[in-house]
Image (cartoon, rainbow, N blue to C red; front, side, top):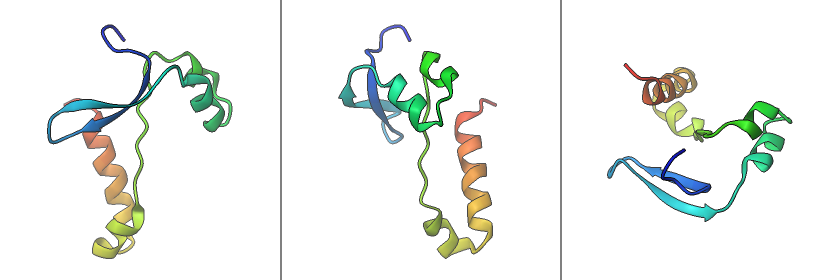
Amino acid sequence: MEGLEAGTYRYVYQKHSLEPLQAGERRVDLAQAALGQQMVAQAPLSIVVAAIFERAARRYGKRGVSYTFIDVLLSIVPG
């Protein structure tokens, strides 16, 4: 990624910006957490999405999990 230092960032949707959390290369650690997938270690950029399914389930019941996945896909897939 040009113009972006290696590190861990948080996306701040209100500002449509990145907030630095930790400087330095973390691809090897992320690849290990992804069950040793080497493509993760070689990727120029990885987007990691975290969700708390219980929040959606409180409101939508069993459908909450599906809605969470749909929300994530709509957030990262262009168009």
